[in-house]
Image 1 (cartoon, helix red, strand yellow):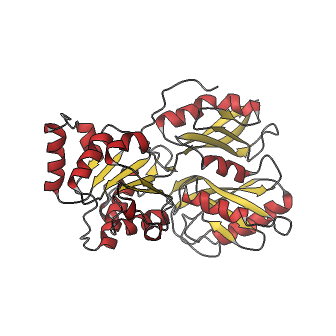
Image 2: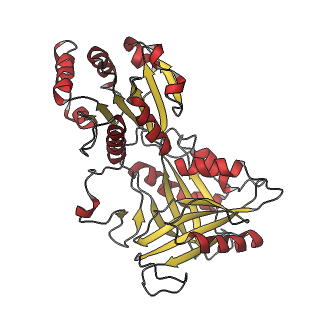
Image 3: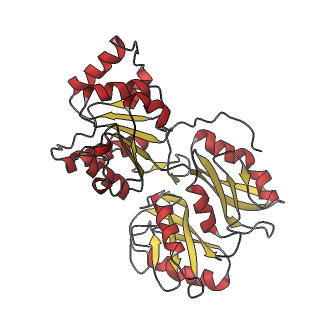
Length: 395
């Protein structure tokens, strides 16, 4: 979500009386690539861009293609083949061993089809949704760049009725399986190719405890574009100057946590108050929440005391599922000592948790870095958090 935010911020600063722009989106990857499908980049006609579609290899040529799209006013898909070390398409042999399809769309700030408007909507999502865009079309009934969305409230959005009828079931499937797909459809015996993207809210970091060591955690989370909240029952700890990058500072008595603190399936909870009794009471109230990650700062013996209190005092038996969500001691084992190093350890573990990765050395990973479809070697951004909305038909 950070990329969406950054692009939107840059877009809102553009004077469209003076400038023109286009949006590039990675829609398909076969083999290896620096970015996965769904990566986006805003490009201006003066040569500036925000976001990325590669590690810097494709942006220059994409900008030249974007100028052509801006002049024509029509969306187009550009294919880059980086699998050949001797390839001269871009003037250099990249050797990345991948084929990348990039959809480039002109931006009309006053048009209802402005692709930036969709990014704004994505930032408001509270649960997973799906978004489909046509990137190849052999029919004049549906043009490249035509979109349909299945939003977080399970409402179908899009002006092309023919496309909506084709995509309803697959959009719902993307949400239920939490896995994007690329699929070909036949419209009056003419082929179209569609990227069905999974859209999920960004990570919501909730820190219990406003101590000095919480500050670097909030700063690193902010760099990643996460929503950052800090809560403490001591108002004196919640000084804005100590947490300038936090999105929200909230004072809350420990006994009212479950009433006043919002926790969603996208919330990562971190307990770092250095107050055992406070952490025990907070754990009592959040153990049954939807949070997929609960991290407890401190040694294992301290966490064991909390678990014992939950059992002996509150008669709460921690289930296997709940224990899978609890990380105590918190963080990855990177030899962290200082508050800044500990913050790196904590943030890295949360990122790994939300990506269903172990957090080990990539050099020892036997499979590909990015999730791939085994049949066609297509790269997808996989989401592993469960969807908490029940299944039902689209409206």
